[in-house]
Image (cartoon, rainbow, N blue to C red):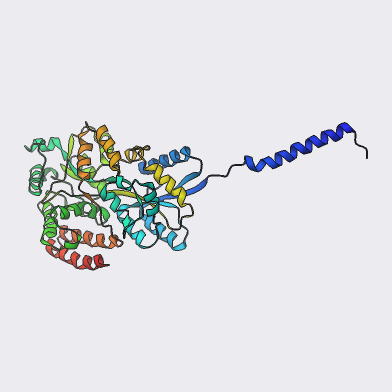
Length: 418
């Protein structure tokens, strides 16, 4: 078959273009960003889930190497699902973990030792001691603090004034606190001087343990006269009718409702209420104050940590996200959204400056200085369960405060040796 010169020339041009296109194609195809997976216990909805979602979107937009994807699990199922994932070896790269649980997972070998990352990063010393210690296990680092919270005393100022109390001088000692609770109790109207959270779960330990620490006791001396006195003080509040008997089942939602509806003149609660209370109870007049103390100031450290799994296949990507979300350049966007206090000292300085005219935040920042972590212990959940049992037994009248704490001590001390 004859082919004209013109047709042959055009064929050569077409083949040349096609060959060039094929050869150039691989260079024009960019590698897809690596997927980094994060699990939380914030459920599928709610403010905390939305806040973390925003942080993920910000990270994904700030760089092209990784894409962070989130799976939100129910709080009640979280630890079980994480345990199942660890057993199967099919874990995500990251999780948000309640800070007292950090050591448990580290001790089980489930978390990545990120000490080398932290050393190269060189910013570990910027974190508050309490939050940072909750990420440590046997001298190694197994997480980065997400943010912190603590609890303070909330006071209904109208009820305090009506009882002849000086709101410029809130109670500073246990005795003063009991006096305030007594004077603001109105049994005929079903009004209690204070709400009390003594629920049989981790929140009960979270609220009670500061009183043990304030009186000079700790886990090692949980059966001492000082620790017994702390439980006796709580028990007296209920027995005298200054706090409701429902304290043994009341959680944060219940005490918040009691306080915002005028059924309790005081409550002990955290930073997360500051944003909601103005909306939920706009006519309520209130102040916050540091917790009353005995021998020293003490409060509980709440909040979560970011933790990387040992079996993560994308540890560099996970670390890239951690550095991004806790960097001063990202600032307080996440913690502001969640109603938390930053765990970094350098960022807290910024918060303190911005909130110098906000008396509520100033009290929380001051209280954070005495906020103590629970543990860290690999078997913290077992230790906490015995503390919860002692609270329940004493406040319900099943045992005396002394017997309840002595029994708790007998069960807890062998656990501490482990």
